[in-house]
View (spheres, rainbow, N blue to C red):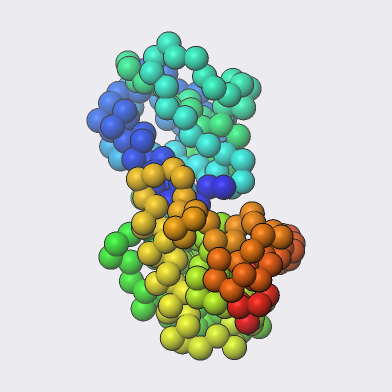
Length: 252
């Protein structure tokens, strides 16, 4: 599932192949008046929360959000693609490489200087993330919102997706269903500190690990809790029915 670390690692993979290179072919399926074109030189490849932003010298940016289904692949010229071509939403070619974004629901091109991503909170993948700024945003949130939904709100802090939501709550022994009003300030800080630590510790690798045995609760329904030996439970909840995993015995 693409989260902040996924986008960071994707940028890390694409950057050496694209940065400073001139595009030799461009095929982007997006709406709007702006277009990247052959001859554009790539100026930057950056992860911004759960977005990937590729900026060219003309001041335009290709922005993709992978949601649940999208993925970027990097191929050498002539290499066989590992996914069907009809799923490609964006294709950027250089003399030596082909970068392909498959099945991303959000693909758009616009001015790099616009404020399209200004709504995002501080990025937890950054070592210098301002947690005080995060907590200030959290303090202004609806106090009746369940803490699991608060953690997913990218306007408060960028980078946490459903995997880390579950892992962070387990690590801090907090119930996913606890309303924000019942979560004190020290616990809020500990949640976001843990999220930043987990995300940053997984930068540069594709197999996530938040516990010595891998993941503590995510996708482990019915198995034993690594802390108290209780059973991991799961349920769909929240505004869009995301699945939550937790231990009802020690996350109270």
